[in-house]
Image (cartoon, rainbow, N blue to C red):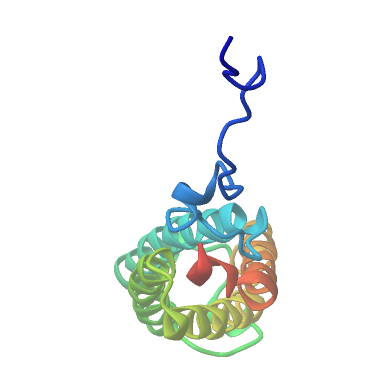
Length: 159
């Protein structure tokens, strides 16, 4: 009888391979992105809405200054509603443009948005007597937008 070797032949030893090594180059590394990216995108959408509201406020101030509850002399800042209307119109158009830049992850747009939201809050505080509830709502929204963009705005770039 001839010896054919052991009954169970041992396969040739091959180097151990990681079964996932083929996908090593296609692996997406986790980043430091949190759920705030959605909130920043939401803040940009809210800025578009606030900008549209400011455009409407501006047009009302320019074309129908009798619409507001208080005469310009009763405001904190003694300015005509026409001047306030042009200010709101300009702020609204800039806010819409900057919000679109935020959605694209532009850092300069984020910084400019913080500045514009601050200016918007200050102008609404100065004219709070004209429309108190609306002014307080816009100030609150501006503060939330400033918080989201200042604290977590960088995360939108990495997303």
